[in-house]
Amino acid sequence: MYSIDIMTLFSDTVGDMMNESILGRAQERDFLRIEAHQIRDYTLNKQKQVDDYPYGGGRGAVMQADPLYQCWKHIVDRYGPGHTIYLSPAGVTFTQAHARRLVRDYDHLILVCGHYEGIDERFIEECVDEEISLGDFVLTGGEIPAMAVADAVARMVPGVLPDEECFTDESHWNGLLEYPQYSRPEEWHGRKVPPILRSGDHKKIARWRRKQSILRTKQRRPDMFAKLELTSKEDRAILAEIEAEEQGEV
Ligand SMILES: C[S@@+](CC[C@H](N)C(=O)[O-])C[C@H]1O[C@@H](n2cnc3c(N)ncnc32)[C@H](O)[C@@H]1O
Image (cartoon, rainbow, N blue to C red):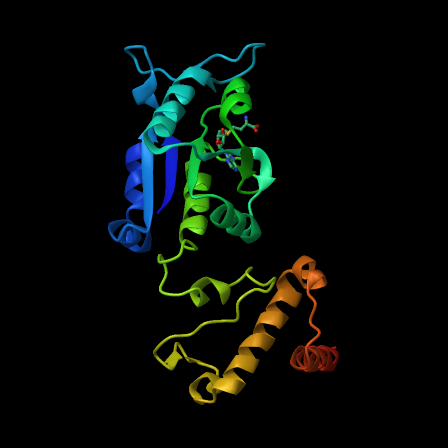
C-alpha cells in the first residue's frame, strides 16, 4: 500500500478533502493510505502555539522546529521512515515527471505544510529530503500544494484508477497537451461536437485527437512543443498539415 502523511495546521480540512471521491474509494480498497496530522497536537505548551518571532527581526512568525519534529517523529515511529517533502515556494517546481518519480521511487511520503513566514530551517536540515514548489507564486500555506502533490501521486498508484491509460493518455504524460473532450448532448448552445467523433471510425478519431494534441501544444506551450520528437510517418504528415493550414490562414 502507498502511504502519504500530511503534516498541517488544518488537518480536518485536508483529511476531508483527501477522503473524497476516487482517493477515498482507493483508501477503502486499501490501495492507499492518506492521513492528515495536526501539528498543534505535538506542542508542549497549553496554548498549542506552534510559531514564534523570527530571529533577526522582520514581520510575521516562523513555525518552530520542535512541534514539527515531534509530529514527524510520531509518523516515522508509527509508519516507518518516509521520503519527506517540504512544500515551499523556494523549492523545485512540481511537474508530472516529478510525480512519476515519487510514485516509482517511494511507497511512503511525508508532506510538510508551512504557514506564516515559513518554517525553522533547522527542521528542514534535519528531516526534509526535498523541497517542492507548486509554481512561481506565494500562497498563505502549504496545504493546497501538499494536496496537489498527494493527488497527482496517488492517482498513479496501481489500482487507484481503473487502468494505466487513464493517466498515460493525458496531458503532460508524453510531452503533449490533451485533445479537446466532448460529452452529450451532440449540440449545446448551438455548438456541435466535431462530426468525426461520432463517425465510429476509431483510426480516424485517433488521428484527429493526435493532431489536436500536437496543435494545442504548439499554440499554447511552445516550450513543450520545442522538445517534442515527432518523427513517425503519421506525426510528420500531421505536422505538414498543421503548417499548411497555418500558412493558409496568413
Ligand atoms: C506565506 S508562505 C511563506 C513564504 C516564504 N516567506 C517565502 O518568501 O519563501 C507560507 C507557506 O506556504 C507554503 N507555500 C506558499 N507558496 C507555495 C508554493 N508556491 N509552493 C509550495 N508551497 C507554498 C509553504 O509551505 C510556506 O511555508
